[in-house]
Every structure is written in C-alpha cells, then in structure tokens.
Amino acid sequence: NRPKMEDVYPYIKESIRDGGQFVIFPRGTSMNPTIYEDKDCVVLVQADEPARYDIVLYKRKSGRFILHRIMKIKDGNYTMCGDNQYIFEEGIKREQILAVVSEVRKEDGSIFDINKIHADGRRFAANPIKRLRRLSHRIKTFFKGDSN
Image (cartoon, rainbow, N blue to C red; front, side, top):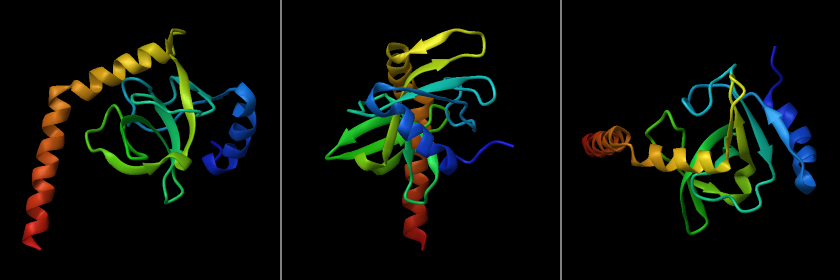
C-alpha cells in the first residue's frame, strides 16, 4: 500500500527547504514517456522560480497533487500539461506549485537532468499530433457549447 500524497507532502516540504531534495515514485501515465510509473523516480527540489518546461508538483484546488510540465506562464497564471496528454490545464497559481523536478532517474540507471527535461518539453510542445489533438478538442468543445 502506497502512502497518500497529502500524508507525504509535509515531509517533502521539510526536506526541500533550504536546498534539500526529496525522491518520489510518481503514479499514473500522464508523464509518459518522460516518467513511467513503478519504473522511474523524480528528485523534487524547492520551486524558487518555476520556468517554462519545468516539471512541477502542484496541488489542484480539488486538493489533488499533480506532476505535470509548465507549458506557458502569463500574468501570474501557469498552464500545465502532461507529456502524454494534449489538453492544457490553465489558471494554476504560483502558490499551488509546491516543488520542481530537478532530475528524472530512469529504471536503467540513467538520469535526465534539467536540461534534458527542458529539451523534452520543447519537443512535446512542438509535437504536431499533440497540437492537432488540442485543436480538435477545442473545436469539439466549441460546438458542444453552442448546442446547449
């Protein structure tokens, strides 16, 4: 049985304060292929100045903890998306961002450092299939809104 994130977060917060780090094994498939559940772990550090393409741990208003990539920053609002997803989550505030991933440790022992994380972010953002799926989703959402 895995501990719940809300139980673990106080330890993360304490560990990353003053330059420390905390290692977690994320759950879910939203960050594939960058991070695989039960295979890869991530190193979390304090989120001093989260930047575009950083992978961050944030807390949704619902209370759910999420590990996704920053795709845009505008007017104090962050737009997030998992590498394996195409719908952007907008309106995340700075105070919701709890930690930044400094490296991804792969199952085979290799390490993705922050530069690789940013390069992957640019690659995933520019993926034409992902862009097409987002456009298709916007069109569907637009027409569903008109029919009600």
